[in-house]
Image 1 (tube, one colour):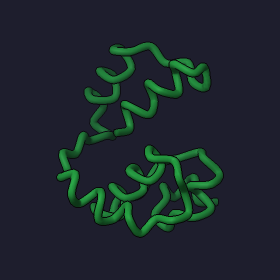
Image 2 (cartoon, one colour):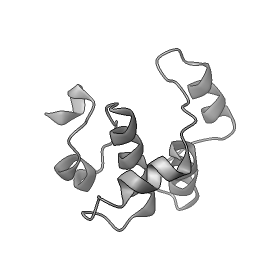
Image 3 (cartoon, rainbow, N blue to C red):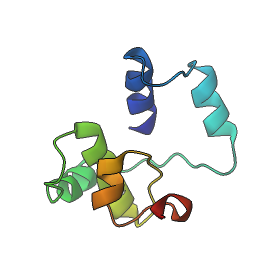
Image 4 (cartoon, rainbow, N blue to C red):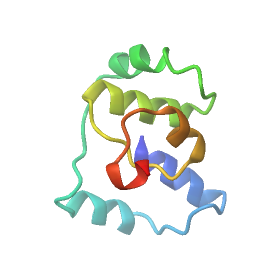
Length: 91
């Protein structure tokens, strides 16, 4: 889902990302892992996130909650409502 949102933001001019180079670089970076989670788990967690109508934000936050893994986001709305943030961004 992260890669899809990044591509979408690049297409509308909000990010400057070159794919597939970016995706390949992230997947080859040991600091990141690609997690294959069931859609039903994302939906179950996402149904509880009424603070956003953005489907990407909802699914990304739901994934973070389902895996109890910190989310890395610069989005102010996400940072204001999501409780599991990468420590450096939580400040």
